[in-house]
Structures are given as C-alpha cells and as structure tokens.
Image 1: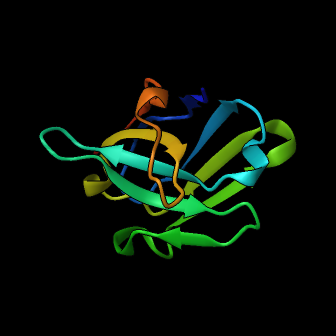
Image 2: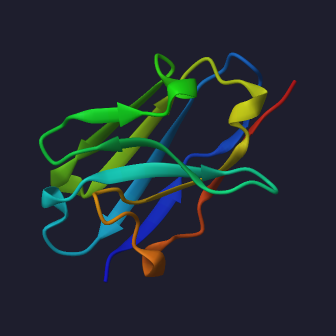
Image 3: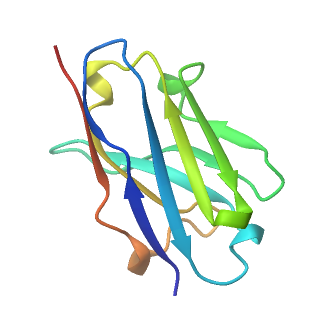
Amino acid sequence: QVHFAESGGGLVQPGGSLRLSCVASGNLLHLYTLGWYRQAPGKQRDQVARIQSGGNTHYLDSVKGRFTISRDNAKSTVYLQMNNLKPEDTAVYYCNLAGPEGPSSGSWGRGTQVTVSS
C-alpha cells in the first residue's frame, strides 16, 4: 500500500507562488505515474497535473503555463511549483498515483490547503 504526505500549502495573494511537496512511501514508486489533485469546497476532486516515470507531463488546461510538476525518484518526492496563482486555485491539494488505473483510493493523504486571496 502506498501512502502520501503533502506539504507546502498556505495563504498567498493573487499572482503569488507556492511550491508543494509530496513524499511517497512504497516500493518501486519510480515506475509509477504520479499526480497532483485538488478539491475545492463543494466540488469534485480533479487531477491537476501528472508526471510519468520517464518525466513526461500532462496538465489541466487551466493551469498550463503556471504550474510545473516534477519528481525526485531518489527522494520518493513529487513537487508542484505553482506560479501566478489565482483565487480559483484555492483548494486542498493531494497527490496520488495517476496512471491508467487512476488514484489509489486507500492512499489519499490529508492534503495541503492552498488559499489564494487578497
């Protein structure tokens, strides 16, 4: 069973930046596609970005050009650099597996709150 622990969220003004980190536990994680997800109050959880084992990335249209996902397999860590943040980016951010089988339902962490507000 894989487990994830997210950190790095906070309160930031519109146009600001944050860098989220997620440490993953489990074997052979370097082989998996990992992703960041977010859930705003009253809304479903959506995938924001994902990164394959070889480094290929994919982004939600609304964050393209502003967010960058990266990974450090040696540290079992995946990052999300978020620039030019907007109020609509406010949500709890989670990481999880992001391959064809989707996220692991038993592996959701507590997430990290990102609030964009002036």
